[in-house]
Length: 444
Image 1 (cartoon, rainbow, N blue to C red):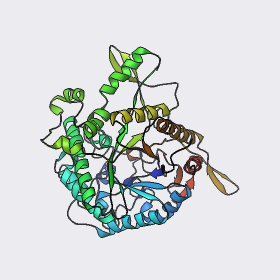
Image 2: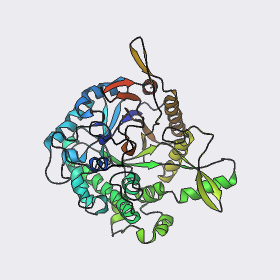
Image 3: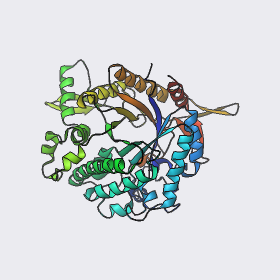
Image 4: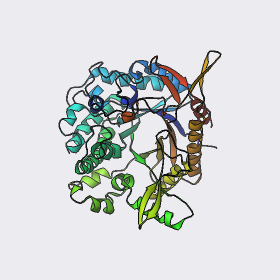
């Protein structure tokens, strides 16, 4: 595989999953601190209070990233670390942490890709309604302005909101993520507000960064594929499922076409979001790029004329019970290329797999042989390469994740890292998948 000379090879993390130090240097409370404190919400009763202690070990982690030949690092900023109350008072010690992190990355020749929101909303804003309150678009814009003024002389790649579907539906209707609500109307309104906040944040970053800034959103997808690609009924089932796909209908459509899926709006009835004049124009501003998070696919069969999601028993599945299907990423990239008419560059901003690992020590040397994760990585990089060969403008690939970490409601029971973390000692050990990534990232 030959990739463009300027192709970005990166690794990705998020603040609450790795930083720890939740009570240090004036950091405010987040909704994930609250969620973890609620019995029964996290499968193993854990939290991100310590996580990977990246807040103290960031210099070692930069060396680790460098050793993997990554030329980019996607990290997220913890909103409550820099604005403990979400608005108003600024915590300088929090800004200093990200200042030092960015400087350290640049000194190591690693380009920083900053994500403004990866789910750790300040609790103080949740008390004021959180993402269900339309005012959050302005709160978020003020926060984005602060970060652009602070880091915008060095950071040129900005991502506004990570996976707004998770921020809204997974968190406000399904209830699996913080704040753990189960209200369909709130979820749809929250979805609309995440996109308003995205639009305002793009304006804020472009206005306040002292260097020309590239700004985009990060959307997650599970492509709808037929259970049997040779069965006409299954092909039709996948087509019908795609029409009802919330990832496209609630997010891709408004961001790139200035409207919500008519089918999903009709299905929502009185739960449909309240849209005010000018909203859709704000949401559909030009994105400098689209970040794509993809882990798996949905397989569909036709039953009584309706698409039904089914498990492909013959396929390999990860520890999350997600089907391993690199062809899904390829079809997704092709589809989004057509949908954006090839005018919006794309990055695979998250792609990875969770498998149980076994640490093997031989002659005092620790190794982790994770062939399945390495094969997953290679298969999806190949799928990305095939799309590029067909003319899709994919600028980079970010492996999820740099290291094992706090996996939200799953606690510490899932392992996505290409680097193993011993949480008792915080020792990092590069897995075989990490060495495989290094070899890929070494290609010209």
